[in-house]
Amino acid sequence: MVDKHLNRFNIEYFPIAVEKHLELLRDADFRVVELLWFSYMQAGFYCLK
Image 1 (cartoon, rainbow, N blue to C red):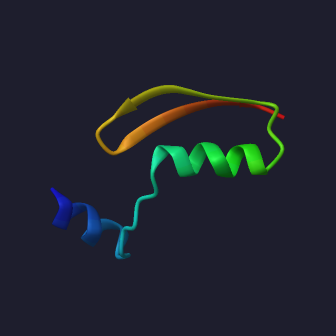
Image 2 (tube, rainbow, N blue to C red; image 1 turned 180 degrees about the horizontal axis):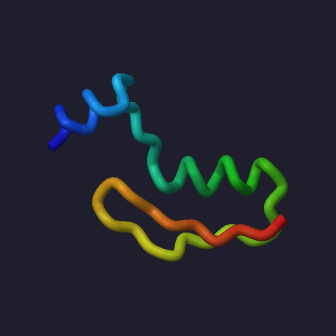
């Protein structure tokens, strides 16, 4: 599955942690930053500017 993903996008994949996503969103001045769900390599965020 990983090889198929990498071949499809033809790039290297370097994920960042959920905590880093939240930090970046807060640093971008979002006043509301919430993690809605997290599953394996995907996450859903709720943010308001």
